[in-house]
Image 1 (spheres, rainbow, N blue to C red):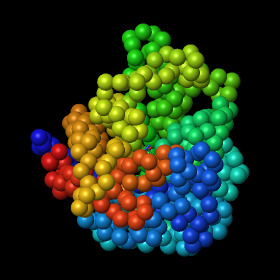
Image 2 (cartoon, rainbow, N blue to C red):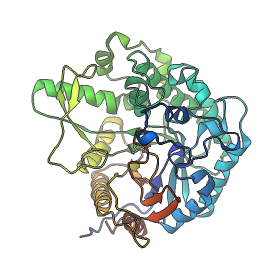
Image 3 (cartoon, rainbow, N blue to C red):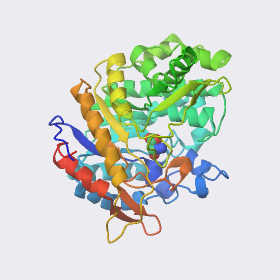
Image 4 (tube, rainbow, N blue to C red):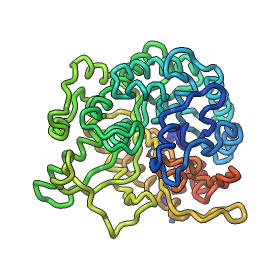
Length: 447
Ligand SMILES: N#[N+]C[C@@H]1[C@@H](O)[C@H](O)[C@@H](O)[C@@H]2O[C@H]12
């Protein structure tokens, strides 16, 4: 049954991808390897030993993919720029062919009335900078700001919506705390330093944008609402720690100018003392916030799970995706309203929302994915409820345009509205793509 939902007339409907996950050709036309190009070659790092060497071959098929976006009726396209195509050494002399790729992509999007939303950094750091310590090096903030400034000038007037970082929490947690992303560290000492330098880089890039950019600039964070497993004080304290570590660690400094107190408790003597000027820089005002939402988690106190001492409690009776994430649309609404209550009426975009399910193979040019259709339907309804309750929501980007390289899961998890046959690179729109096209055409009425 469809509901007649009214979204704002200027609501933006799009899809999202990222460079390393779809482009392939990581060393083409003067590009240098990224940290992910190297990390994929660490035995056991990526399921089935998959790499982004080919991925969705988007670097070569970009024009056809823009045509596909047009056919799907998309109004906006969120994508990231591969830093190591632009600055092979991470800094210094730009690679003109790398700049040309993104100039051509953006021009094709604009020519097809598809609004480009550009993410400057979606995890793929030039290997040269990784070798200098990556985000644990305080200079990383300046390397990033210089790269950002170059892109603002290169795409000036063609791109009106920029975001600095995609999910800095994942870069910190997966790359520096748990070692499952590059640089593969498990360091209580370096993780908070990397997080802080990511935020400093964000602040410096925003300052560069204010000086030399046009349009709007924001940040993209992943939010996962936390629910206590019981009403007991221990689980409440565990929830507070988990919530501060994942949901407040980046937003409190950006919007409130201070880190959550819980982080000093979590990191203990490894929690650094940060210069006050840093926090002033991090608080550079932004124009909008991007929220990536996938699921929620229920947490309990767990003294054996240092340093957070909080562990997730499996919701066995609930529906889950192939990522083992609970399908929980209400969490999207609570995220949007929590941000408004805590940080004010900042314009919001849902910059990623989607699900991996065990899709069948295409048959006669069609692929039925009812669970993904239902995932989008229930989450769009939750987004609409948040809008009705005052969320300043400006747009929605489905993750993802195409099946793609799902980081440490390789190609074993498919999130796309469009199926990719990786042997032939044939694209086949799934039923969810048709559903989404109707949603866009009706501006949300047909949900
Ligand atoms: N996993 N998963 C799907 C999706 C990932 O593919 C994106 O690159 C990230 O921004 C975010 O984690 C979400």
